[in-house]
Structures are given as structure tokens and as C-alpha cells.
Image (cartoon, rainbow over all chains, first blue to last red; front, side, top):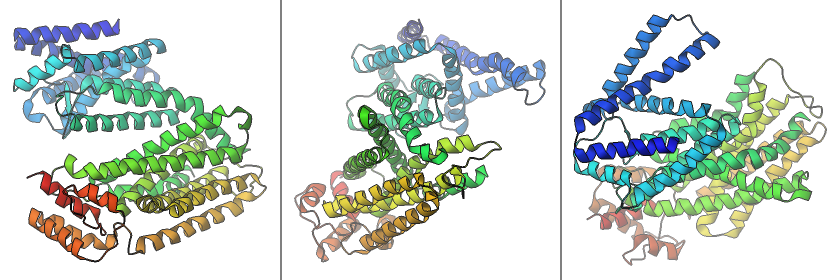
Amino acid sequence: LVVAGILATTLFFVVFFTLKAKKAATVFLLGLLGFLLAAPWGYFGYQLFSYYRPFPVDALSYALFVVNFMICGLCSLSFPALRTSIFNKAYLIILCVSLVWPFTEFPELTVWWTLGLLTIYDLLAVLLPCGPLRFIMEREMQSAASLPGLMYTGQYFRLGLGDLVFYGVLVGRSMFLDPNTTISCCLGVSMGLLVTIIITRSARHLRAVPALPVSVVFGFIFYVFTPLTVNPSLERLLEPYYM
Amino acid sequence: MQAGHLIVAFGPASAYLLLLSHQPHVIILALSSAFFFLMGQVCASIVWISVVPLRSDTPFHLVVRVLVLELTRYIYYRLYEAAERNFTVLTPSVHIYPLQDLSSSIVSGLGFGLMHTVTLYGILLGHSIGDATLFSPRCQQMSAFTVAAWLSVAFNALHVLLMILAFDGYRRGSRLRIGVAGLLHLTAELLTLLNMAHDGCVVMIPVEFALVGLAGLLARIVTRESSYRSALRDREGLMKLFGAGGRRRSNAAAAAAAAGESKNIDGRRSLHLIGDGRALPLRQNSSVVMRAASDDKFR
């Protein structure tokens, strides 16, 4: 279901690009982004404040705060001058977090199937000549302006937000298991990103490289093997400390 | 108490890394070596778990762990070598920090040590949050957390020194040095078996630190040798070189290095690095020679 939804959104964007209906696409995207920035705060905020109670908050001022936050985020994401500012990066990360959060609520099998299928889809969609993502990337390279709010810019690379989301999903789910697993998955994903960057530099004839598969594979290896093998071995090794 | 343990265990490594973190290669190297350490741990535990009858045999476990980790060190070194070869191709900016053997190996060792601390001590640290403490019946003098914290400091330092020794050994291809590094690692791991003896922890910690001191002595001897690949004492010359930037100067420096007397450490590799056929004997800084090579590429 989720994969179908993501496929639909991608095709939607392709259609928009081909029709050059840029304004409509931008409006739609901004609306979506605004919603995404604000929604988890609204939805989970209620649970957060009613359960943890850090300080008293009333609904009206909280709503104003959230709306302010959202507008700030939209501004920082959509003005091209602010492309590499720290606000941009911070808000992109927050966006990605807000996309990750629902995934942690899904049952486990859904998450893993989604991740697996999306990885394969990413691999195919970017590398195959007829893939939609590759199409978008090439159009974007040709046209000077690009859609706001979808790409995270490092110095040599641009990382799509979906990639960040799925790394976040993997690491987020690993937190449920073990702190050891979490750190291992974090490192695995980061190293996968390094490998992806190396691949991007060394395969120059490809404009776009799928960032998802390598990191997901690394993270997944750690996710599976750390609780299975490393934790028992660490238990044995640390036994003399408490027995 | 938890804060004290935290500072003891993580302090030296994080302090050093934070001090050096403005240099770009430090963080990448540290993270990569930490990652390789984790991979090595995963492989070691896979090997250990698959040998079912010997599962409760701790010395076997430790030996397997040391073997696999040394193998991981070697694999990491090969990757580092490949990266060093491509380094100037990937970042064609003028003010790059040269990948020197000593600083790179220190930082990689810190990555190893940091991950060792995180995995072997982090769990205990997590358990130590709270009011109670934990004493093992075999070790009445110190709490289990204190023992583990000091041990992880020792292992941190040991990993750094072992990495220096190992890098030197891999450069020369000398099995003696690699073997010495591996043997030091093995001894250190087997000394932790002393922890299981009654009152063993009191003896174990000073002995571990003595081992670290021995490794430090060896590292000092190795790095002061005249045939060590890159020594810090050349740093001033290197900074002057890269501060000016420019093809003629670096070529001149390479020519100067060639003119100077030095042993040709690995003749095969020196030809490979230069790529235009000249056999420049690699003196102390391979990065100087690489600058010459890269300037030939980016005309």
C-alpha cells in the first residue's frame, strides 16, 4: 500500500513536470510540506504532553507555536537564497523525522517489506533508462530551478529526502531493540552513505545514483546480526564483571 | 559516579578527536575504523556462535576475537591504502591536509578504541545509571563499573598504539611487526581472563597498563626510526609546501626528496603511485610525491 502511494506520488510529479504546470506543483508541494511539518507536532504532541507533562501548555498557544514553526519551515525551505543555511538543513531534518515517526508505529513486517520493496524500486528507478526518478533528475539538471524542499545539499552531493527518511526508519526501529544495535545501525548507514558518495564520484557517467540500497543493506546487516550474534558474545565477555 | 566513569572511559578518545576534528580526514577515518571494528566484531561473533561445542570456552572466544580483529585491521589498512592512492584525485582542492601515517593511524586506532569502549563498556554504563552499584564477588575492591571503565581506557590506548605498529608493519610487509602487534592484542585480551580469578582485578589493571606502556615504547621506537613512512617532524616543511601551493614548488620538493638519500622501502608501490615511470624513492612523506602526481593529472 505504502509503496503504491509513493509510486503514485512520483508519477504525479512526473506528470506535473511534463506538463510544466510548475505553479500547481509548487503549491501542492508547499501544502504537503506544511502539513508534514506541523502534523506530528499536533498529533503526537497531545500524547506527549498528556503523558510526560514537562510543563503546562494550553491548546491555543501550542497551536500558535506550531503554526509559527510551520511557516518558518516553509520559508526556509522555499527561498532559494537560503539553500545552504542552517535553517534549511534543520528543517529538512525535522521534515524527515516527521515522516519517520509514523513508520515506527507500523507493525514490523509492514516496515520491512516497505523498506525492501522501496530499495529495489529505488535501484531500478534511478538506474534504468526509463525510470521515473532518473527522468526527474535529468529534467532538474536541465532546468535551473528545482522544486523546493526535497534535496539535502552537502558539498559534493545532494541527498533526496526519501533516502534520509528510510535511513531514519531503519535506525529508529533499531532503537526498539538495543542501544548497541542502534549505534551499529547508525554507523552502518553512515558508512553506506560514504560508500555511495565514493560510487557517485567514481561513476561519473551516471548523473544520479540511488542512495538507498547500499546504506539500507549495511544497516540491515547490522540490524540483523547485532542482536543475534554480537549481543550474546558481549554477554559472555562481560560476565566476569558481575558474576 | 556515573559521570566519573563516563569521563574515565570515554574521555581521552573524545578529547583527542574533538581537538583534531577540524581536519576533515580525522572524522572520516575515525568513523570508518569504528565501522570496521563493528564489522569485525560481528564476524567474530558469527564465528564464535557457529562453533557450538566451544561456546562457553572463553579463551577460545577471545582468541577468535583477536584473530578476526587483526584481520579487520588488515582489511582496513588495504582500504586506507587505496584511499590514499586516490586521495588527491577525489579532492582537487589546493589546501588539503596530507594523509600522514602517524596521525592517520592514531585516529584510526582511536576509532577502534572508541567502538571497543562503546560496545564493551557502554552496556555496563547504561546499567549503572541509578542509585545502586554493582560489585562482583570475585573483586571486592572496586565496583564492576570501575574495573570496566579503567580497562576500557587501557584498551583505547592499546588500540591506538597497536594501530601505529600495525600500519608500520603493513607498510613494510614485515611479518615480525604485524605479529608483534597481534601478540600484544592477544596478551591484552587474555589478561582480561585474570578478571575471573579471585581478587584478579587488582592485578589485572596495572598489568594491562604495563602492557600498554610496553606497546607505547615499541611505538616510540618504531616512529623514531629513520625509515618510518611519515614522521611528524616533517610537518613544518609540509605546511610550508602546501601553504604556498603550486606546481613548481611541490615538484621541486619531490625532486629534493628524490635527491636525498633514503631507502627505497617498497619499490613496487612507489612506481605505482607516481605513474609516469619515474622511480622516486619514497622518503618520509608519500603525500609530497602524490602532490606531484596529482599536479600531473590536473593540468
